[in-house]
Length: 361
Figure 1 (cartoon, rainbow, N blue to C red):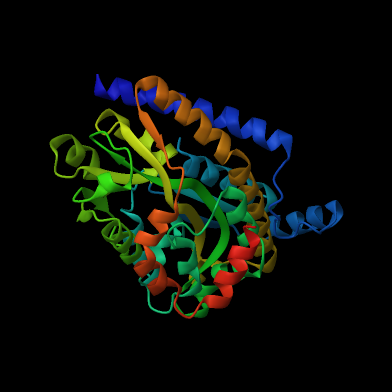
Figure 2: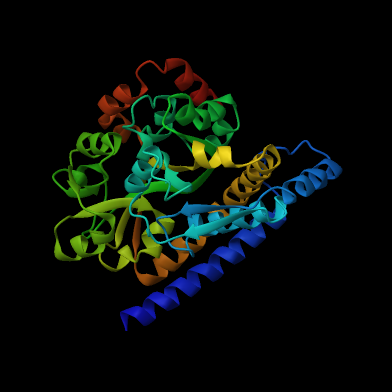
């Protein structure tokens, strides 16, 4: 019965994603620029022909979420565009559902030169504790963005370029290709919650990211380390009282079945990057690299164009299933509670912080 339910949920989620993304991309409301967007159609066709004549390269792409998730669909869009724009000379093989392990495992493989994974999509917080990573950490700061538009406006500037390039520049052996997102992350619990005071003493599942740990501690709760694939069980058995995820992941993993109370604090934005190893990048000819970058721009716009609609559809279905959403009218007490970790993460990045704040006005 559980397997049947999982299949039904998967198919339903896929249909919702396709519908929402189709509507959003038809509307053409997003303004995320793609690499090579200034090229003429003739130049693009010429580059595609050049790439098609290049030796064929197959690249592996790891995704921890399912193929039917927003991130899975973004990966599929990227794959389709890479293969189209390269004239078939670059093939992307997607390994979804955490085949290669959690994001940290995949990053360790890529940065150590293991060669098993060429590309991946990661939450930017997964890079937090790698040596040399600095500017990228801005995307993990609690309560830094006031909405989706604020995030996209920020990464469209040279701040976004600095973040995408940082991994390569500090010698991690990887480089950023494009941004994606999965919405604001919110806390959810087994028991009813009405405000910040209810978090005190709660055991909340956290990633090993020091910023997330500091955020949970600042809010008076106790961070608990639980593997993501064990979280459903940990919630149902009371090992933890709650956790945090974007709404779309909360639904796709059926956490609402065991923790039906979500408070919409939006403590961090689900900012993501798609990365490629330097060794995989160097396998590509200039024409193939151009095709990959252009495809990344298209996939980024696709993601930006449908993420809000997908989230809205998920939220409506969750309400129908009995989930209680609690709005937060004043985020200042939440920011104040996290002032220590905010100060630690942004140390030495004052100029960036001022610019990001200005972009949100």
